[in-house]
Image 1 (cartoon, helix red, strand yellow):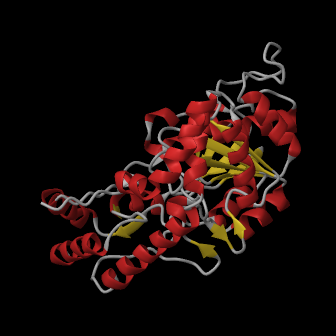
Image 2 (cartoon, rainbow, N blue to C red):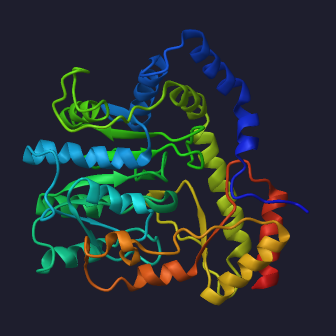
Length: 381
């Protein structure tokens, strides 16, 4: 039986094997495993790619979010952490790490609803939230560029300017995505990236990066990731052991060469899906907006809850993988109960958790695999 994985990492490795092996071999030769030369080169090359002044490698995407927020608490307030009275607006339709990072930075998440078309945070709901009496002392916004499509950064920047808020972009799923002519992660005060293996730019383990044009944010971040000090034996802040391993940096350097090609391949695969599936009754394909350059970390369709269950059953029998990102919104999780604010009705978020379904997508997904996925969808629907 033909197996169709969500993402074929083995095939990707074979495609880039010569480059990856060459970069890793250099690490074996110099044996500089902690903060080695590959990390510095990777930071420089990604800074050039994103067109920002500073990039700081960290251990994972979650740490990238947390450390970015911690730097802002220190920079803006002169405190190691935010207070619980400090509120940060974000989306509940995201991975746990987004809200968790806010809590771990000491602040309180404020959840507002999503746009039902993009699944990204609804800027009109942010405005409603800020004009209400619910979220006094809002200090920032943490938008998530979900599935590889940018949030409306023009509107977010206008809101941030009007209310004097910072923006930290959760760009974990969107390396290479753009809002107009700017790459995501380069538009707010700081951007946070994940190099988890399944990401568009993924390593062979965990990894993350902070991007910023602010020299003070970069300086504080570099201290926080190394136990909180410039001097190894004299900590200034409460820090972490969150260095990006040299060997991961080497692998990412090799794969960075292919990122635009691979993102373009994902976009072409998405076009095939959309052109084939658009006519199916009761099935909604992703909507892409003219100002956003979508890089399809996920290809997400929408169907009724009952049909989704049926599709997954048939696909499992046929060896076709699917996923649901995300089956439970953050405001329904035990970890956030009593620790977060729900601003308004989150009806679009809750509806999305019942209806979204992610299909296999990747730069090396072949037409035969896509044809099988589309054929089975038409049969079920």
